[in-house]
Image (cartoon, rainbow, N blue to C red; front, side, top):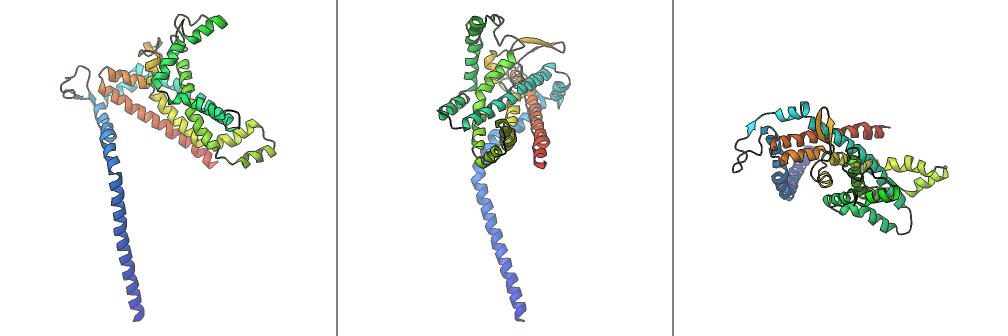
Length: 333
C-alpha cells in the first residue's frame, strides 16, 4: 500500500514539474517574441511587404504613361508574361546575363586570389605591416560611385593618367581617341580591374583573420616534412580558409548580378559602347543589375520586378549548386 502511495506521489510530482516547466517555457517563449517583435515589425514593413508586393507587381503591366496621381490604378494583370518575354524573346536580357557572367569571371577568381595572396603576405612579420593592411583595406571604405568616378578620370582619353603614361612611356596611342572604357573589348575588363582593387581589401581582412587562427604547429610540421611555401599554401591554408572562399564566391555572384553603381559611374549612364549580339545592337556593359535599373528608370515597374526575381532565382541556384557540389564534396572527402 505504501509503495502505491509513493508511486502516485512520484507521478503527481512529475506532473506538477512538467506542468510548471511548460508554463515556464511558454513564458520564456513569449518573452523572446516580445524582444524580437520590434525587429519583426520593421522587417515586415520595410522588407517583407516590399518583396511580396514586388512579386505582385511583376505579374502586372505598368509603364511611365500610367496615371501619376494614381500610379497603379491602370495596372493590367498579365501573369507570367514578363518572365516569358525575358526568357524566350528579349535578347538584351540574355546579353545582360552573358555580360554579368563575363564580369563575374573577371572579378570573382581574381579578387579571391589577390585577397588570399595579400593576406598570406601580410600575415608575416614585416615592417609597417599595419600600414599596408590599412592601405589595402582603405579603398573598400570609399563609396562605389566615388571609386567609379576616380577611375573614370584615370581611364579618360588624352588627359587621363593611364593614357598619358601609355603615350609618353610606351608610345601606345591606340586608346587616345576612345579611351580605355570606350573600346568594347576592354570596357568590362577595366571596370572589373577597378572593382577588384577596391574590394580585395575586404577579402584580405577576412582571410587574414582566419589564417591567424590556424595553429602554427601545422605549418611547423609541414616544414619538418620539407613542404615548400606553395605546398603549405595549397595543402594547408587554402583548405582551412574554404568557408571564407565560399562566402566571397556567393558575395561575388550577387555583386555580378546586381552590378549597377560602377556601370552607372564609369560609363556615364550609357552602358558602354555598342556591339552586335544575335542581330541586335546592345551595350557591352549592360549588366543585369544595370538592365534592371534602366527598365525601372523608364517606368516599366512590372518588368523591373520580374527581372529582380529572375536574378534572385539565378543567384540562389548558383550559390546552392556551388555549396552542394564543392563544399559537401570536400566534407565527404
